[in-house]
Image (cartoon, rainbow, N blue to C red; front, side, top):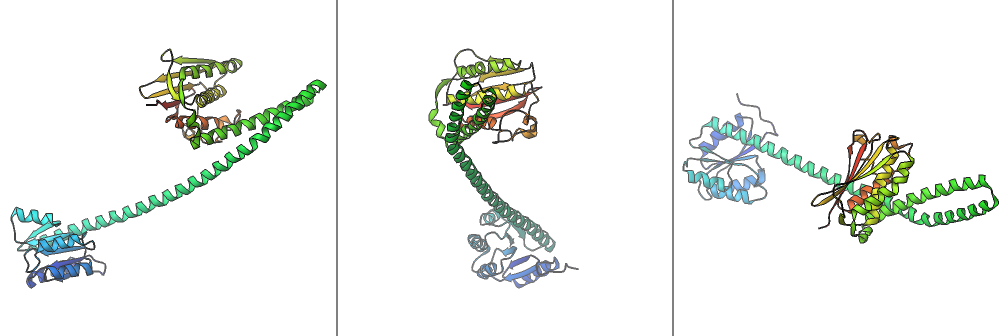
Length: 387
């Protein structure tokens, strides 16, 4: 007993100029639960294929008018029918005939006289392959749409982030001047209070000036990040000695380290100058931020080590401490603006130091990575050497 056909069963177009063959093949297909359409010659096959859009075509080779090879070539040249798999039915057994069949686009051959079991197996096999191909195509289409949707969402998010950055940069720019004026006025008041000997009020004003300096520092950092984002700071690139920049930064922070009982050391792989095309001011600030960050978290009586190394195409500046380190899950976040991890809640800062270091590294076509120092953290800024 054959399978029960359904209205959504695959359709096979059978093309043969012999009525007996048509009847036998159609009966076999219907017994397999498939639907069959028929055509008696090549021209009729082309018309029926375009209208019916079958899932597969069984095509006789030797026919009057258009033969099977010509018909198959025409099917493959038509955008409507080019993807429909074609199986040739033929008594031709020469290798050259089969090669010609594959060249014009056939997927397979069945040999006449037809063995119906073979026809059924080959048809079902190619229908399954066709179904898998369609599924893959549909998945590709869905994937492409999902990618486009995500790209649109990413573009929208970047636009929002850009707007937020623009607003924060504008606020920083507009408020920096009045804050500087406020600081000047506070200093004038402090001079007057010193003359009067009002130490209590003077102490309060000193605290206020320190708060103003902190806010000005935040705004300056934001504006420097804005300049880096806009590429403005590229105009500051010159050939400079990185050994001198790193040495000066270590020397600058030595008093701070001594006050905290921390050993601050510099390790150079090679002695002498290490020349590179950089923005010296930004490099000095980035290195200073790394050292300042390490000193904040180093253990009392601990050690902060700064090292400078080079390769043929890059330079590495590493600052390592023996503090609590940064959890792996937080390392991708600590370079975001204003991010403050749980371990840094009780330390000074607003979360712009490492963001600036990463921006400087990126400006110099480099990276900022964090690794365990066992104990502590090793922060490495790598910059590319200019060619």
